[in-house]
Image (tube, rainbow, N blue to C red; front, side, top):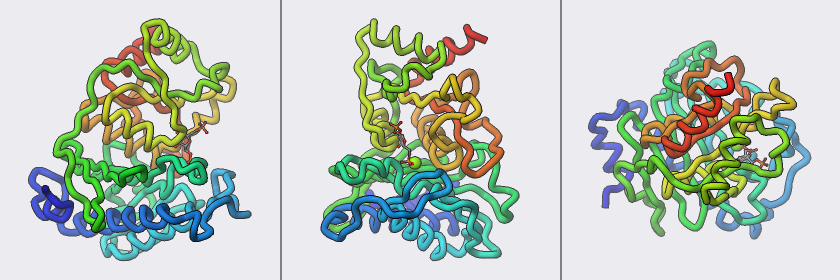
Length: 314
Ligand code: AHM
Ligand code: MG
């Protein structure tokens, strides 16, 4: 089987230069460390919440803080990294003054699920940015996007400019390639949405879900975007976290830079689609680091139906 290291050396047709290889190797190493910490977290007293509240107004978990530190350390070990942006930090952190790449990440997505032992993940993206002013760019500027899913297996899902590759961590802590060109099937009768928020959905989402139920779709909602995304990579379907129709200014729940954009790039690279209504996620021009956006992505034909429902209502 192809190891992650062999894949990095080959680089054929990818955006990887020597510097990006170092960045990516260090990010992969960080995901291995986070995976290790998660395996025994309740034995190590790393459960519950701390008294600290992050910029999102959420109580940080010890593992949020630890994972953030592990990702920051991976950035510090990478001489070409200029800035790090994290869900857990108020603003960007300067890393190396002469760096040319910024690393943007959600160190531990779905961390409300930690104590219930459900799959969580790390989401990341690498962009070209040597000054802080270059960080706010749309998702098409991402050079690398990926996530690590920490479940029964630890899986690294990546796009580096040439399709999507999936690696699985073996018992010796080595990532081995388990899919060389992952694709999202264009159609599947499965949707993921927090149905408890039904009264806040807009008419396009409400009508899509109503029709989906009438035509025999099934519902799955882990409440951990990485886990829901990984299911879509495996068997298709759509994920929706729409804006609250009663609070449209809030933008939605998920964050553009380190949740929607990396997942959007991965999904498009696998033949799926990622939208916020009538436009695509990757074309949104960001206005702030922690900006929230509505998110809809997954199997192309299903997402197209939702997009058509939005267009009918303009
Ligand atoms: P987090 O980054 O603070 O963990 O929040 C993001 C998570 C996503 O993983 C998940 O899809 C969503 O929040 C769940 O929202 P809800 O609590 O409404 O089910
Ligand atoms: Mg998150």
